[in-house]
Length: 202
Image (cartoon, rainbow, N blue to C red; front, side):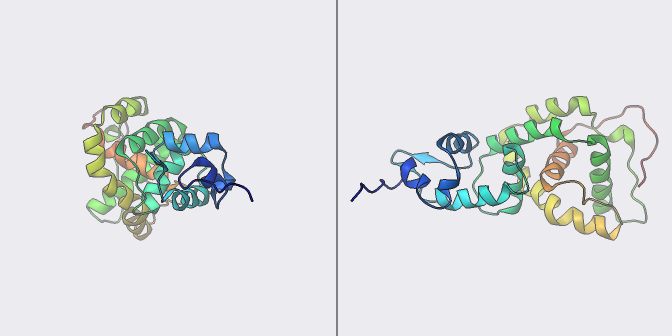
């Protein structure tokens, strides 16, 4: 009869479900992102439950920055440190395709949320420049991120989609994790005035 794996050991995790789906290297990578945790006696008791969420989320969000933000937004109670959330935003921001178009769409939905009307216009000059995104996100202190990120997640998943639907603003091509980043940028960026058309309409 073979030896039984010690509870909390990497062996015990990798011989169970869903740990067997991940290599030791992947477990260490998840650890480096704060998605799982290890204590003095090994992996924490909820590691298998967290791995199930990580595995399921990976079906729609492959990269770890995407997965980290989507898990936070869609899995209430899943513990993700503020530093990992901020890191995920910083790494995802430059990966967003058609970024200005998506930012404009999110900004219009936010304008609709603030003041519902027949057509929420957004001044191009009020939007944060894409070249400033990294600086804005990097400058955000973790305390501020901790205070605001629940609001960003709520807006991304439920609040903005409801207002956008009523105003016929299409958010469907903007993944939840990208919405989180774009909403954060709108909140964290200082007031901006630079040349641009007076409004951007649908």
